[in-house]
Length: 425
Picture 1 (cartoon, one colour):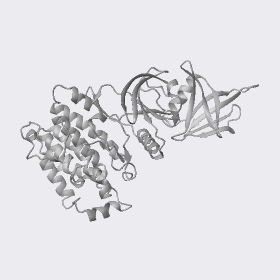
Picture 2 (picture 1 turned 180 degrees about the vertical axis):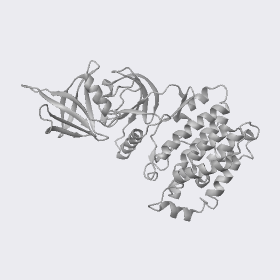
Picture 3 (picture 1 turned 45 degrees about the vertical axis):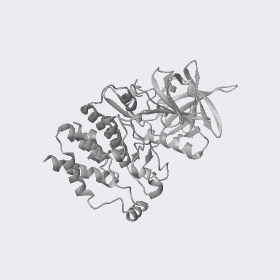
Picture 4 (picture 1 turned 60 degrees about the vertical axis):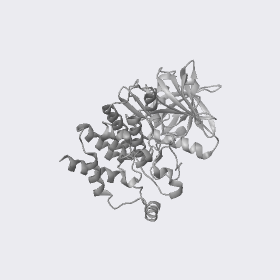
């Protein structure tokens, strides 16, 4: 067995090796002893002396429900769904804790209040609330997002989509999911507890503006998170200061409630996001009926950068460099140039997350790095003849069933690598 890491309440085993333990099913006259085996997303239980003939078989799926039996804050068993009924089994707490580690992020549990102690409410809204809680079994602090179910199938599908995406990602700059619980009224997503405040809170409380070096560090970490998501075909679609936790120089991107897999942009809440951070192609999606891609997150990140620089939200009317007095009189000229290219209204003219990440690294290496030259070279090579305003052509391209969205991640990555080498020569 792997040693349990103390940084997480329940860390599933990273090795796909079978797990065995002894379980008991209570009967009136005689208890039955079974050998439980968990392997390859399946639980089987056989009579102790007959390993080849399972009495119970349960296939573990993402939203299979499972209930732990708890008494005096100790695990003593579980209820196993079998042929429409719940079968109750008891086992040693050590074995149950090991089994729970394996199942923690693969199914849905019941009765959260028996597993976690409420500490305080961190946030409330129309979606529900976020609370801080403490695990009864190892005293670890977690954050729990309680999402209110409204009875609509589309809404439940959206919540389950968020859970699926969180389960599919693991990166130091992204919030990590631990477990999922469900009641008749709520889905409850248990994640790591992140110390500190989000960028919105920090900017409202900070007496002085962030220094350029810190802004670049924040943006680099944010683009690392976005590049990872985009490489894994995921759009976040709600990049804003309130969804970016930042503490002691470490950043975490949170809240995947509006995220989607590439290809589902026009199916799952196509017109979404937060005012002041939404790309034009998202705002206009109902009129154009055109698919959009990962560059919507780059636009949102550019709006975050503008907020860090000025303390105000960006809109296209105040983005004009010629008319922007803040820009003209600022020592942050280079960073405003970065805002300008990240928030290009035309997604064909907007760099990818990978390109921006590479550009930020170049800026950190040289405070005199010429962003205008980089951009001019990049888009003369890649998009010199593209124009998003030719609606008839764009509509044909984007509605093709086999056509990927505006600019694929891999092609943008290749362009960025080539240009970086050329400019550094």
